[in-house]
Length: 227
Image 1 (cartoon, rainbow, N blue to C red):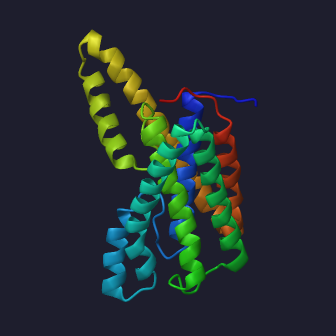
Image 2 (cartoon, rainbow, N blue to C red):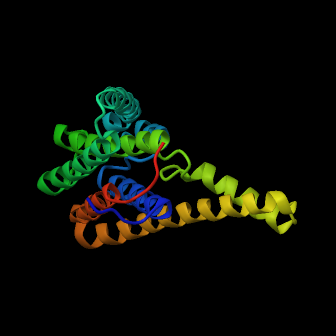
């Protein structure tokens, strides 16, 4: 089976998809974060105060995120013991979840009540896909910069930029420069995913979710060394 790309290509695709899915979920599911679920603590607090919809989905986002990661770890360990292609199976499962997000959103959305069963199921599909992406990256692509949560990446990139401008030691400068480039690359593609998602959601609604499905398929065939 042919593959393409490398670590840089995979990082770009994963970061783009995370930004895209997170933005589409936020816009279409009453402020639900799907890629970095801790943001749901903030929106949950706002929903409770303002008596808005979406309280159930935001309350269950983190437990679901944790459960999916735990299941991915157990499944990965079991498949590895049987010499199965763990990475390919998990990545394909993530694509299936992204397709479920697309199919449910286009088939039943928009959702006037984000706490309705079908709206919750739609959000859960997106959260599961992003949880699986986080688990796969942490286990198989730990050397890549984070692709879903940009706070830490932005902090480190800013520190690296200041160190380089102040004149870091030559021996350390090369390492700092490499890290800064990789982090900036990930931040850029995450932001690009957010921007493209917002534009396409405005133009086509939930139909824009075919994009992360296709990008997800591309990640399955991206060549990269794994742990």
